[in-house]
Image (cartoon, rainbow, N blue to C red; front, top):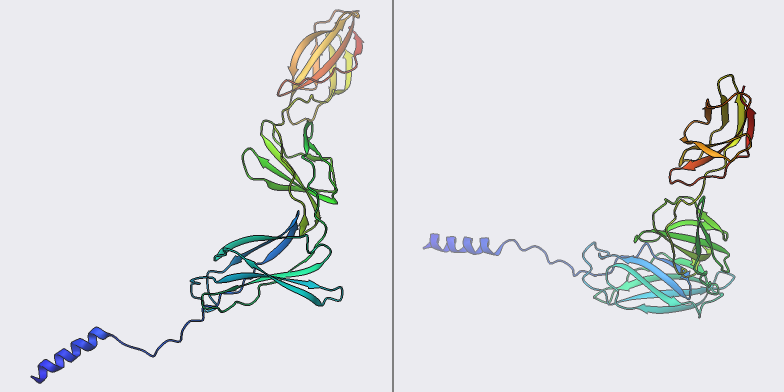
Length: 316
């Protein structure tokens, strides 16, 4: 009988497991935001931050009752003269963006920050602050005019500045910052022929103050530009030929030279096409006759330069 009672007790103990001391209730305080930033864009103050998905106890944050934006106005003596709390709606852990109109803050020096209240009503510490002196909204520049030029794509626009940021998208891709400029014109020298580009411009006053972006201008640059006219052409007669020489072109898309000849002041005729070297030997000459020569340069897409000024030589 005793053995049966002992076995039943042992089984009950093994089924219940170990029971330790009771754990204190969790506080569920949201972790502090550490990457808050604010800037002025057009008619709004834009804010951005990531609300952590953890509590201060490094546990999952199960819910958020509210998130508040604090806007503190500072005097020239750097003292807080006014504070406003703005509730942010529908905020969940993760990336957050929001905005408030600038109209009530123009000319004021502000410091902005956020905090969150967890499911048990306990609030996080305020985030890192972001400072901003609000200016009247910058007007977006006009849609840029994109022009195909020899150096690339030239952009012109109108705007009030004081500086500008230029964005470029290739094909259907997303716009990326291309460059900053004090004003137009701006030449994008990093383009490729046959690629479609879209350009937008934004007025910039400071690192955290800018206008909305202009409408996009689209262009597909093409090579319609002739090489430079060759230089230094000379013609030297020898007993069997007239030897031509000139300075080599340096264009990256250079292909060759066309050679033109006139006999005894007659019309010029092409005697050679797409000669690659900057020299040519004309052996089809007759002694005593006068010959005039001119050359042009041609690129890979067939664009041809103007001809050089003629040079003259008499065959020996």
